[in-house]
Amino acid sequence: MTMLLRNRAVVALGLRMCSSHVTKGPLADAVKHSSDMSEFRELFSKAKHIAIITGAGVSAESGVPTFRGKNEKWRKWLSQDLATPEAFSRDPSRVWEFYHYRRELVMNKKPSAVHLALAECEARLKKQGRSVVIITQCIDDLHRQAGSKHVLNVHGSLMETRCMSCGHVSVNKRSPICAPLKNKGDPGPDVPDAQIPVDKLPRCAERECNGLLRPNVVFFGETLDSHILTKVEKEIETCDLCLVVGASSIVYPAAMFGPRIASRGVPVAEFNIHTTPKSEYFMYHFQGPCGTTLPQALAQHESEVF
Image (cartoon, rainbow, N blue to C red; front, top):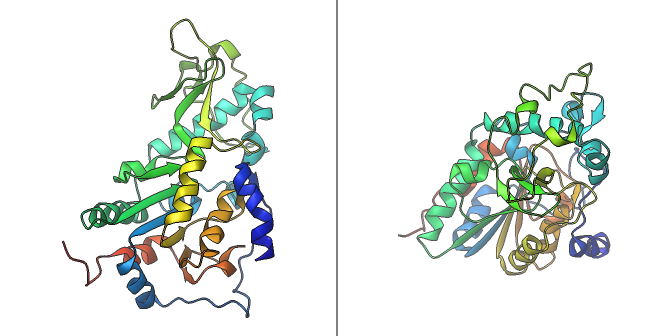
């Protein structure tokens, strides 16, 4: 657990960083893991406070690009190089085009079988006096669309804006978010930048402000919202079962949430199409499309009573 202890500082600081180390092969021989669904279901039936950590793989099952691999570039730039405060300061028009493209894309997507299974599970268990919290790195709002109520968005939301001047945060689902961005944001490598004047980009509607708006998401290099992080820490310390669903486990500090929970001796189950850099910490690993494995895992157990 040396790596785990060394990385706890990253979680405490809440600094969003991305590691390039990704493993996709079999788990190491020394790792004790299980893919016994019946055994997991028994634990699930007894859990009172379940924390579910979700990542981009969940959104991918709704057709939202993960911005990894073949989707890691927008035009000629790496997506993670555009999602920085420095990039927004240098060229807010380009960054807004990128986020406008992402906003418009997710507005046309629907919750997947994963989103729906999580929402149904939360509602069902609530009637039994049990709780489910979703700690998500996704910024597309599909969990809420599916009906999930207890959602902690650690990386913010594409459907919110924050004013650079007054700090006001508001829900914003306008399409387009401002007239000059209409039909802009095409990701093709040869598409020129729109070069929209900064005073024509999304502006704050608060009285006498008119400040420049930015997406209310956590850029790489920024710290997570301290209020959200405090809530996440509470869930990490109190849950009695954890599921890590569709998460690459390479974006920090979220990559350490599951291992932190496992270090308390709490069962953690990973659901993913491949292994991850953190698979070795977890008691269970269920490989395959999450839309297939997760609904089965969360279906009503025979012991459940209403």
